[in-house]
Length: 401
Image (cartoon, rainbow, N blue to C red; front, top):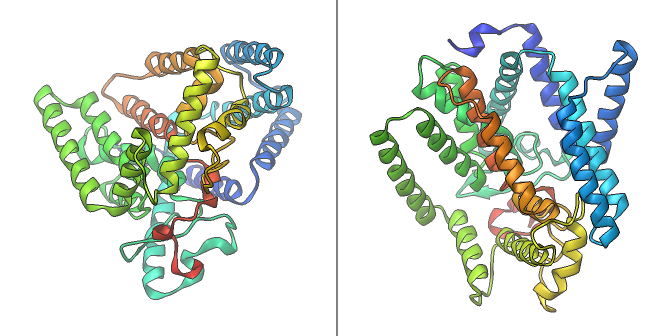
């Protein structure tokens, strides 16, 4: 039974609108301001209700990482200020979502999310039409989202709705992409109408984000692994490999990024390289050096920028590059940052969390678990907001020239 038929009411619609407003605020405001707003919301909730829900397991986990961070502060690998703000940010984010979402059925939360993605996908499609018709204010939203990265690929506009860059819309849409795949291939546990699934998939495709295409491939792969028979799994895996090869050979910006990463990793001399590729490889090298020095134990929460500053001159070796200081604070991907700040133990705990709470049953809750798993995979590779400062001519809109 479709989720949409179960809870298609005004409350869900209001929640969907609220989600879009939050996304817009995150695109417009600084992250620090979002944390302040979360604190204010929790304070108001405490005044009204008289208490704040706290999960004791979460307290234990934060305590372990806090002790780990304090040890690294003493060793000089981290700074108390960075550790403090990182811990406060994690705690406030957790408390906000735990208190405002935990009380509702997960089905209602997912339905509000699907509606939100559906409306944003429709806006993505409207942006494509607006670009072809020359209606600038509809597709170029820098008048509203000042840091928005705009661009074109092969005569099409890289539509990203109210987000700041393509990789962020790809990540936000990724659970909905998985649920759309489920709705197309599993009639019994369909999560949305077929039309909604198609709209969402089109919205992701027209973002022209490499991460979006990775998300579609991962969604298909996870769905098949969870639900397919052995023969079907082998066939789909083969088809995905063929599809990846076709995309690599036919889609220029994907090929540029992949080739750039390979060339830099193996040490080939290149005259021009995609800036995203250089930023990724630089942060991989930072991770390698930091892990070796910390003996795989990590350097503490919030310490990544300290480690970056410690090794960047060695890596760039006097070479002038626009990738210098790019992703200095976030490490380019969650995987890199987790390894640097929390070491091998942090990655193992992350993997254990996924294994422990992954729902394996072939029902709607299993599909929701699969959707969250796809989100986590993409977050591990997410290119964060610092890449808005990139200058990639083949991705830039002509109006920026």
